[in-house]
Length: 404
Image (tube, rainbow, N blue to C red):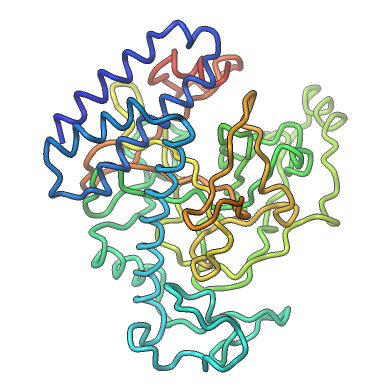
């Protein structure tokens, strides 16, 4: 493992010195990130029995594969992990999921193809209906903590949210790994409502969307995920619309400043009632849906995870309950091809040459082996704006390229 780290770190440093960075830094930073994710997740997929020859082969592939090829491989690597996670969740939550007893009658008229996880069962005989008439599959009545511990027994780790060890007043709650995870493992999923660039003006509080909301994150392609309505999850599998968003406060002191008055004049978010989100049956007890609690490392600390875009294929309806996101606008623009200032091909399923509808999400991937520690993520805040006093850049050049 140390051998792999050393070699890929050297490769990334060589790339970072390329004159091309100065011409199109944002694009090249994306390539560098994808290159790292390719190495991390591919090595993770090999498992603990990988040897030096395997590492050499992965590095050779990384040096020759195109950006599109690396993106596709990263998506497949992440999807494999998410699929395994969904299978574990089914094994824990669904009654006799391995034997098939207590499951809906397969003659109910729906697609009877083999399924690996539980949302497909939501239209069957064991389902109950919520107040809107939507079907929600009956699961074992486990508390979120119980579910989390059972997941740890199967995977080796789960997550906890508790006071951060970072010493500044804004740190608040932090995200902790309970257990052990290998490099390249999917540690957490960033939950919430996703907004494509076409729907920015529907984000609550627009244009100062981050005024009272620290739980926003942006992908390279401009997709914004708002985790504020997800909060700390829940204790049930339920129909979720992502609408529980508190009204932003202009001034913590209670008074209205001149700046606040200007903001109120400019703040004209569009009414999202006609678009909104159709809602999805989601597992609100999801033990990995806490990426939004990861803190930025303090001075003399280093991040141990990095963000990875994950395009969940909506054709995988059997896994849908465990993906803690919904699209604003009912997913009308999930096939957008624009990636910031450049274009790329959306991920295609391995079994089809045509685009599949996707839900754009983010996951956190371990950049080293982790063991019972706080999860730290490089926020890469833009150096074009005033940054909080607590923010210590991990790499100013990366920040500059990310927002160039």
